[in-house]
Length: 48
Image 1 (cartoon, rainbow, N blue to C red):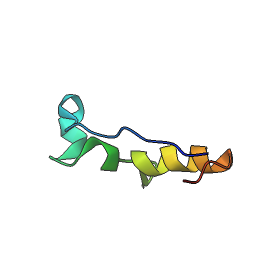
Image 2 (tube, rainbow, N blue to C red):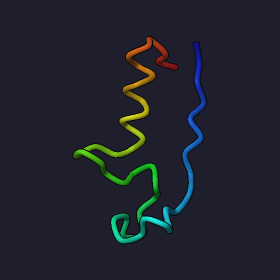
Image 3 (tube, rainbow, N blue to C red):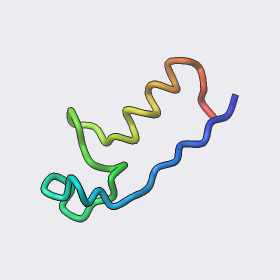
């Protein structure tokens, strides 16, 4: 199964943490938000 992750935005509401970094790349728990999302899909064997 394939998945499309819609990841965009500047994260202006969390600009104190993002420092002009794209929102999907803001680190939470030492990992970018996008990686957290990818790990969830990987757990369910969605890897394309």
